[in-house]
Image (cartoon, rainbow, N blue to C red; front, side, top):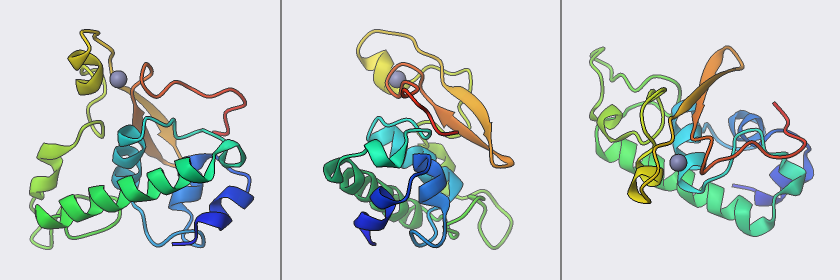
Length: 141
Ligand SMILES: [Zn+2]
């Protein structure tokens, strides 16, 4: 994947991740999970990211996708439902996606209860922890 192009195009981080022209098929769930891993908010303006942060995002996305495939996820996009219409095993290991109103695991580990937030995003949903993935200044929704 081309790290440089994401940095050069000014957009919200998740929008850039989902943009097929910038990266190959990082799905909505995978994007949320990857951003959670690297503790970045999805509305972070891409032009404020360092190259190191960008490569951490991609490493995390790769990690999440590898895990998903290993656990029976079949699609890189949207639905963690396999060809038989059954839910893949992957949904059991999600850290943030689909957990609105539940406590963030990472914050819980440090003794703080922070509830996962869900926001509408491009006709879908975005999930994040408001404490360890705070909304950035000049957020690009
Ligand atoms: Zn948290």
